[in-house]
Amino acid sequence: MIAIVALLSSFSVVGGVILGIVAVIIGFAGRSRVKRGEANNGGVALAGVILGFLAIIVGLAFIAVWVGVFKEVGATDYIDCLQKAGQDQQQVQQCADEFKQSVENKFSVTLTPTP
Image (cartoon, rainbow, N blue to C red; front, side, top):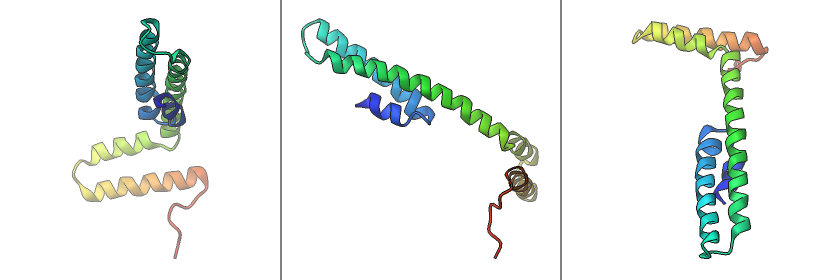
């Protein structure tokens, strides 16, 4: 069950990678119980291991996608601007305005509708 949830939520680090690792561990624990004769659900345990590994792989691929999207929208520039601004709220607001304008220009969208 955890492996299925991990696979379905593999678009996030927690869903894909963390839950995938948990699914693999539980799957291997289930397989060892089957080998010792304490359980008879070897197929389910194997499916958990396989789906867990798949969720980890897909989750890692999505990390690469999210990093690419993060860079594409200019978020690294925004973070740099915020770090330079420090506690100056006027500078922070200017950073936010510049980031918003950058996203609107890059993707030809309007983030806030005009009244």
